[in-house]
Amino acid sequence: MSAVIIDGNAIASALRAEWKVRAESLKEQGIQPGLAVVIVGDNQASSIYVRNKARACRETGIYSEVHEFPESASENEVLHHIHELNENPKIHGILVQLPLPRHFEDKKLISYIAVEKDVDGFHFNNIGALVTGNAVFPPCTPYGVMKMLEKSGIQVEGQHAVVVGRSNIVGKPMALMLLEKNATVTICTSKTRDLAGHTGRADILVVATGKPKMITADMVKPNATVIDVGINRMPNGKLAGDVDFDSVKEKAGYITPVPGGVGPMTIAMLLRNTIEAASRVQAGALSRINTVNK
Ligand code: NDP
Image (cartoon, rainbow, N blue to C red; front, side, top):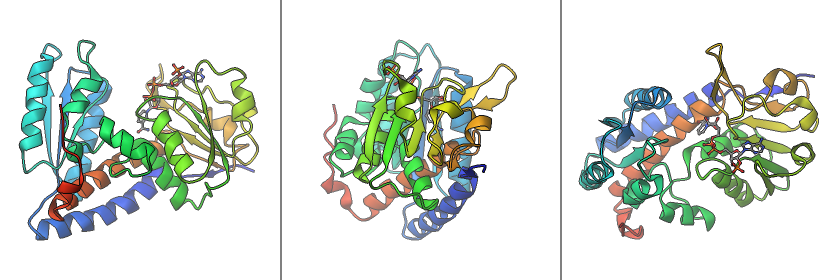
């Protein structure tokens, strides 16, 4: 029997309707949530993501600004700009669109974002909060995956979850969030021996490798939940995930499509984190966060 297809668009759209009510209520109290996106260079995929984020903000009642820098911009110029955004009271969330041009150091730029405005959850302090189970701004993509599992009624506790990929923005935080919900977690990387042996034992399999269709049906346990984070542009112009959807859907119990799976959830959780940042300002919760930045 074919797997249940988890509709990321539908789940994200229901969540966004909730966030819109929260954003409107904050606005009535005098704070309109505001997001600033910093983008450097002319990466085509990044420009599309940024446009989608700005549109999603508008639709949810969140104020947004896009700050574009040419590839030739210096690191200092961008750091100075982030500093100004940190001080700007209209802005509650700041994100730096990745990847950055080579002469930029991701970690350095992200560490300049004020912790209480780091809605991507990538600042070291926010990662530390995540590791200790105290996340305020969980990284949006794995957070979106957790929400999808919850909204689809998929049990996490006690399940064997296998995460393929260990990037700081997807794989590692994904594994931590699954662990926090009491899954038994295995992380696989490009150096893992017998990958299929690991993925084949997963009750929940999350794949974030950037390698199109690399997970095939023979690597999946019957009735497993398969979450495909990958977004890959194929030579024919179409998008494909890291999972071979057509074969795996005949074996899995649940599966996410690409597009229309994790992608829309990532944006929904960004909106959530921005609204959360604004409501913490509104509630005067700022003092509870360590705002020391270098
Ligand atoms: P990275 O390139 O940063 O990380 C890829 C990870 O996959 C690495 O840890 C790498 O291992 C591992 N890997 C690569 N090849 C294999 C293999 N053959 N077997 C096992 N592990 C492997 O990618 P990201 O985490 O940033 O992104 C992953 C995918 O998710 C991309 O397609 C990206 O576009 C997509 N993405 C989607 C988002 C969404 O909203 N849906 C958001 C963010 C990303 P090693 O560490 O050993 O090199």
